[in-house]
Length: 106
Image 1 (tube, helix red, strand yellow):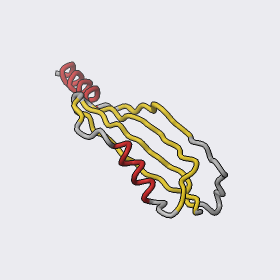
Image 2 (cartoon, rainbow, N blue to C red):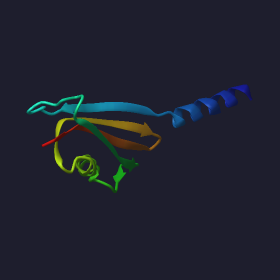
Image 3 (cartoon, rainbow, N blue to C red):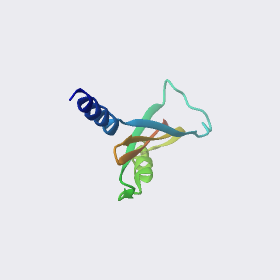
Image 4 (cartoon, one colour):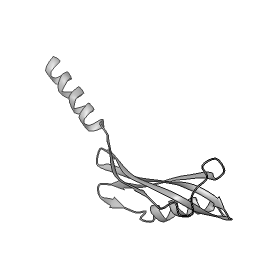
């Protein structure tokens, strides 16, 4: 009884465990320079769910970039940083991307 309970607990912890993996971080050029005190910081997050290798949404990167541009309609976004990571679950994972930058008004 004690052994089977330990086995069930171990199996439950193993199947329910999750991990996270940071893949890439990109940083763009700051161009004419960013005034960190004056320019507005903009940020967005998008994700893609994958279940057993099947993907339905493939444009999550474009959505993140469009959301970032929507936050700075009358300016230019400089110093864009893009982080891409994955959160793993049992038989599925989620690809995530965070974009952030500074909105410089012209």
